[in-house]
Length: 116
Figure 1 (tube, rainbow, N blue to C red):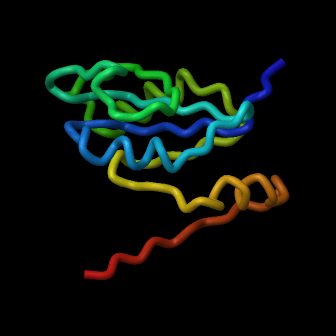
Figure 2: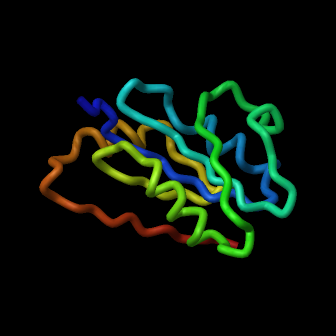
């Protein structure tokens, strides 16, 4: 029986400075898995990422770019729902509470605004 509700898939390419912020913004929950797919020219290891948050690290050919890395994550994902985030994103503290409280029959799209 699969108890994973959410799979967070993160393509990674040379962003070790911002990746920990994203990982640390994801709560540790039993119904959530985090998959980082590295497609950097020089592969990273779990110990290279400055976080205590557990995650699965997979690898993709860097010639496949972020889309190829997302596909590798899709193949490994066990969650009922998929969440894609780029390594320089982060979640608000209540994001996963909001995701969990929504009726599954409704799909919500989130808009992002950039202020410069």
